[in-house]
Length: 183
Image 1 (cartoon, rainbow, N blue to C red):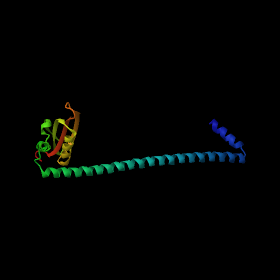
Image 2: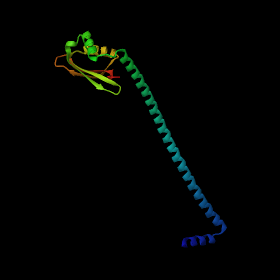
Image 3: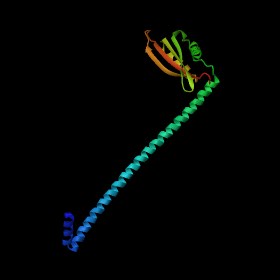
Image 4: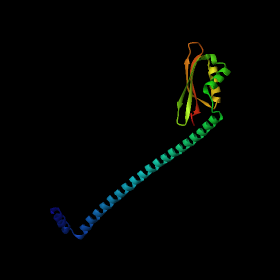
């Protein structure tokens, strides 16, 4: 209560001109503080709105990429289904034997191992083949022949230096998709 009495006494002792000076200064200080608070509020709001807009633009780009990716996946599934329908009894091992016989590299093949992996909608037939003593021309011809076959795809290619001079040892993993049994 004492500070209020002191303020009241001080205000009573002021003449009207000094009172209005102090009142104007107080109102000016309050106005400046309110302006600073308003500026801070609007600058912070603008900053947040810009961040929100940037995040929305990033999300929009991600959604576009997802839709494009989904469309590509659907198109690839249709293409795979068409290829499977054209030759449902396709055997990757027999097809590979035909290619190696046509290229005359059957005798350079060391091992040939078949396996299969069940996927969501398909069964993936995998063929792992090892060659010894190949030259780069033979490898290129083989890869070109495999690339022209739409039904198979190359999963892995490992090239090692051979013990035989000027030749290479190659491990090739190719695969194809087959319909799941019973579908």
